[in-house]
Image (cartoon, rainbow, N blue to C red; front, side):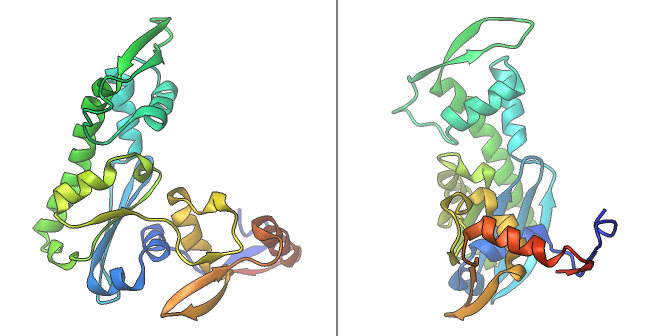
Length: 244
């Protein structure tokens, strides 16, 4: 499809590394950290030490598995379960919010609505989150990689936005954890400063003008922001040419 459009692919980007490069600061890459990027169906894991990626693997589970658990546990559709996950889910049990209630549209063949508490939802979500992060930790431990992540865990991707994810990561890995947002972006709309966009920002970074800033690349869009960049990008490729 790319060739038919009159373009030629110059190189391919590795999504796992792209997310890590977009979110890890220079200290984290140098002193040792792990970037865990939660996609819908895959979780990408990269470990950095001494400024270099020393481990990378994609695991066949992601945030959608949590959605499915909610759909089954609350007997609703996956669409409704996704809404519930975004609006009410918390990754670990919090007694302070446990009695707060919410209404769920039940599956079509059941009809009607049902009321649940956030405590009931937490009992569905937390075991799956612990299973995912625990499995990753055990795999890194088997390969003797955990010794290189003293600087901490960086969670990114859509799944990282669920409250409580960092708390569970710290409990399992025994180091500090934070949510990873794209770093050193200028001229970009706030909508792109999100864990949802880290992989895309990392993959697009070669197209941005770069400059060194304390050993870290800084990405800047031209005047007009993202849409201005997109228009100028398209103008360049009205005739057959190359892309990176």
